[in-house]
Length: 633
Image 1: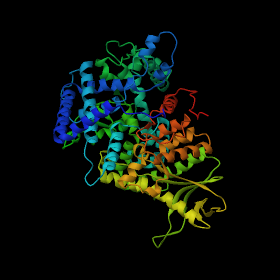
Image 2: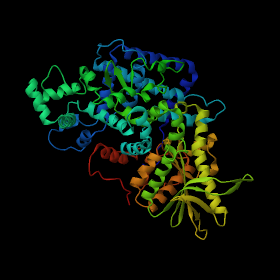
Image 3: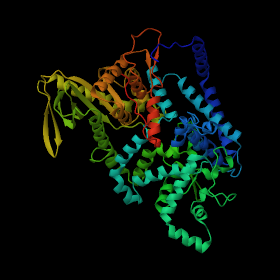
């Protein structure tokens, strides 16, 4: 993979021609996209939207990993033909296409309820939305540079928009849940006081959605989950109560279970649990129907749901119907029809669990949200938690390094006496780790490509974090006896740096926002003026990616080797990559160092994260004994 890859000249010519045509008449291209969006709207509104979204939701279920289809990947026993049918169906687009369909469908009432589409109708809608998504991306890519901007401003804008359009998650499931539970647990008292439930209740409801939907799938996995639901019901009701009802009403235990779990009941087969094949269109109104079990769950379901018609703003304005428009589905991922709740995308609630929980805090009390949840005045705010979590992660995979937190020091800068703070300082045997943590996030406008606001936010995070690392390094190097002050055990302590040691410096800026498509290519940020070239020698990494490093890096020598090779990429023009974890995978494959740079040759570091993703996917669905990726020696 580290051999040079040459672009095909015919492909280059076709690409240039397509770009020229797209640039020739921007208004015509824009209006054509709007016409295609109107076609999609008409197609979706032509049918009962429950079945349209159900058809797309079934395709997402088929493309989503679970313990059953992951086991089937390695199955070599009898019934191979059946096993092939139960393997995961690869579809990189379906998650975002389903979400796009939900945004359009919920923008107007369900006027054609009971008009059930055929499979080919669902596929026509899917393909139409995919065509729109592709062309919106190309429309933005082929645009001129932003006003008063340069080509690197344009590349920055496209990188952020493409990342948002492809809905790359922040991190792996186990990591997201870990950060979620630790972030919001401090605010459970407030949530309980205002809503009557806490963050754990929200998490449990979202986790249960998987069970409620997947337990109706007509395969071995669905059968296993439906039995799990039966066992839960039986334990809660108790054998004596089941027997008493059977004597009183004549209903045997399966009939009683189905009476209490109507989403598993089918009047055509009233005596048995009715499982649904994913291609059974008429069953989608039941497959994605999710029933809350308790009053607390009803309350949470209602807060996380919206009705058809509630999302009308999505189709308004010049860019109405464009894929990155504002949508209520981000914080209300369930759809309510009458008294029934539907969950068409199991990915959407989980991927937005931070947004929807934070939104509940903000709706309840905007002042609490800004000062106690987001700010740093409250010890257990999100921002302060992220700092502490970062320190714990470094301590996990660099156990021989002593880390200190929230340090202050004195400098003279621009003729003024200042007392800056450094988030984390690590002192190793021969290395000093200077670490800054930034919790700033990109808002919806930034992700839609509002370049001025985007650059301002990146300056506040990427540039500021790198500058603060640079400032602390300069302080240590230029002072004979540099000292830092920090609080530990309610006592102020002094940390003196031993200048007799020839320390190596590693500067790291940790982001809460997943900025992989931006931060991996710092030359874009330097050329746009967001990042000073003086500060570029810092490793910029998201908190979620750092968790992967904490899991997979075996020792300090490996980490330093990674950082040395990683920072060298900042100086090269022949390497293309989009994700930090691809570079980690490249490192674990022992592909560094790279050959010398040559003109007209490109090295692509793509798809090297596949083994890492496979490990976390299998681990997160519950497969035990999965081997962790390690560095090849």
